[in-house]
Image 1 (cartoon, rainbow, N blue to C red):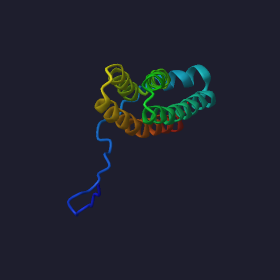
Image 2 (image 1 turned 90 degrees about the vertical axis):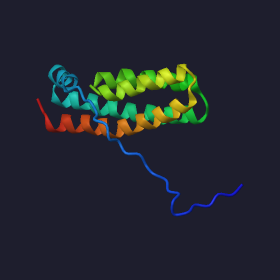
Image 3 (image 1 turned 180 degrees about the horizontal axis):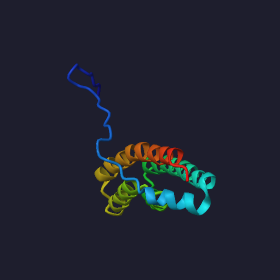
Image 4 (image 1 turned 90 degrees about the horizontal axis):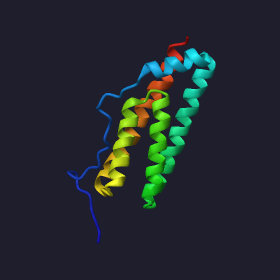
Length: 134
């Protein structure tokens, strides 16, 4: 089977249009308890962990490993809550629910949404710790 694209056939990239929620209090608590430098390091390390787990999640989903994907999604929830990524944690929770329901269409949609959320919220958290020293 061969497909040809015409002018009316286009591929669109979805962009994030929903507001992301960053609980700034979580970051402020980290900076207060650990100091500015260590608080920033915790947020930066958490951002790296989120990125690594997202890569693992994409691999698990592409390999059909729903158990691994659920485990990675749960770890994303835990990490993101520690640094105040409220909307990201909610979407990761939605993904866990879709995985448990074995809803493959929802899994595909929510996992892409999670990646869009990560792009927005991780930079928001990193910017916040840079711009609001304690």
